[in-house]
Image 1 (cartoon, rainbow, N blue to C red):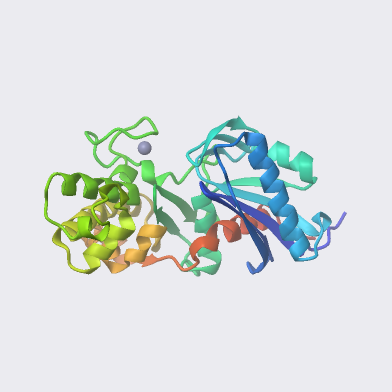
Image 2: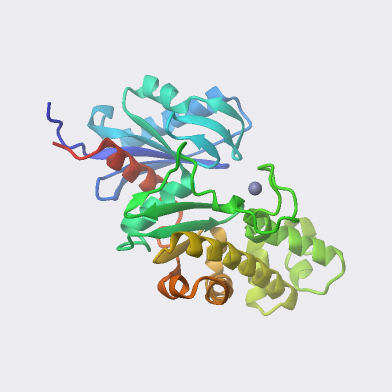
Length: 328
Ligand SMILES: [Zn+2]
């Protein structure tokens, strides 16, 4: 039986603080969107009810019905069994362990539901509509509170056996490095994320190194975050510049591994830390030139992302259209 072409996919991006739902056209345009707070400390059921309410508001806003949808794509951080649609664990949702989210949402909404890692979704969105357009082989890295990623090979998202490929933040950079929540130690995320930058800055200011940082937070050192370190570095503060350069260097080392293994034509850097622009990217590019295989290093361009905060929902929707297959 032939199916008519559906007008939109529903996408929900579940973050640590907010839930973003959007209706997205097959071309990647956002038709309508709605936000609500995640309130992740509440019970799983309460959060799921908020997903349903936000989804329903998004439909109402666009005057559309469930039957007009190709499906629902849910993007979130963490260890997801995307093949079975199970949230194994998520850093943003502390109480969620082995939650069969795909089955729950399918039962509630009566449409196909697809689960996708949020950084994988952003990779897909950047590839189809953002800084990765035209690249057949590319890697997306989000450098934010943590570090995540997505790998596109031969125009397809590479998902691995369970759908959890692309955990770039948990590649080992320093075998003797600090212990990570994932159980490993010396992960890239512990050395180059926004959290790592803030932690290093607080430690070094407390140790007495001179810097504008304490002034910028009016002495409340616990308020130092990566954005503040970026501001100080922009003003030429030597300590802030050194901390960013160190993180960028580690990020570059992570990229060297990716370049040597995948030989991508583009690496796209998104997430909060990417607002630092060349302050972050230039040292990383230099490390890639110095350390990666020459031919592969010459062929890769390292660029900032283009889609910003909507990349998760756009990518989750595009994942629905791709997974649903071609229409007949
Ligand atoms: Zn780790």
